Image (cartoon, rainbow over all chains, first blue to last red; front, top):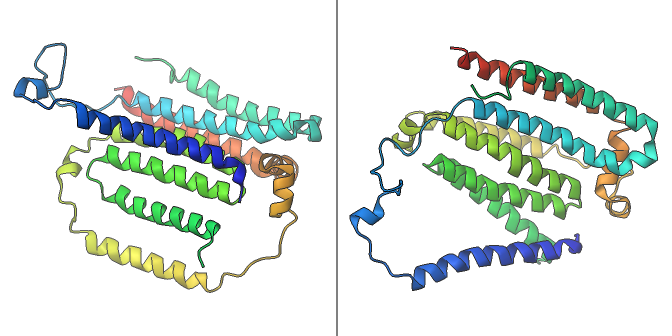
Length: 118
Length: 172
C-alpha cells in the first residue's frame, strides 16, 4: 500500500473540513431574517423572468467533446515523455504519427467552423 | 481480522456502491453528476491503493475532469424538466429490475470460473521500483504500439462524430 500519498489524503481531509466548517460557522453565526424580496434571485434589481435553467447551445457540446479528445491525447504524452529517453527515435516517430492522425481531426474541426461562434 | 488495507478497501467499496445508488436515484441531474464526482475520486484512490498511480491520475484528469464536463453539458443541453417531475418509479421499473437481476446473475455465475492467471513480469515490486508511469510507457510504446496508434483513430472518430452530429442542427 503506497504510504507516500498520505499527505494528499490529509490535504483532502483538511480541505473538506475547511469547506464544511466554513459553512457550519456561517449557519451558526449569521442572522436569519428572510422576507419575500430577499428570497427572490438577484438579477440586478429586476424581477427575474423565465426559467432558471434554459437549454444550452449545442456548440458547448462540441467544445466539451474536443476538450475531451485532446485531453486524452495529452494523457498519452505523459508516459511517453517519461520513457522517451529510453526508447529514443522509435518513440519519437510513433508519437509524431499519433499527433498527425489527431491533427486530421483538428483540421476537420477547424474547417467545419467548430471553433467559431455563430 | 480487519487490517488497514482491508478497511481501506471496504471503505472505498462501500462508498462507491452506496454513492452509485445515490447517483442514479437523484431527481436533480446536477446532483447526480456531483455525486459521480465523489465516486470518481474514490475510484482514483482505489487505483492508487493498487499501486497504479498513473491510472489514478488519469482517472482524475480524464474522468473527473473531461468526462464529467461532458456529462454536465449533456444535462444542460437536454430538456430534462419533464423527467424531473416524472414519477421516480416508472412503469418500466419491473422490466429494469428483471434486466438488472439477470445481468447480476450472469456476472455472478462467471465469477465461479475466475482463476488467477500466471503472473506477468510486472509485479508490484517491479512497478514500485520503476514507477507505474514508466512501466506503462515502456510497454505501451514498444509492445503495444499498434493499439496505441489505433487509439488515435478512435479519438479521430470521436471528433468527426461529435461535429457531424452537432453541426447538423446548427445549419438550420
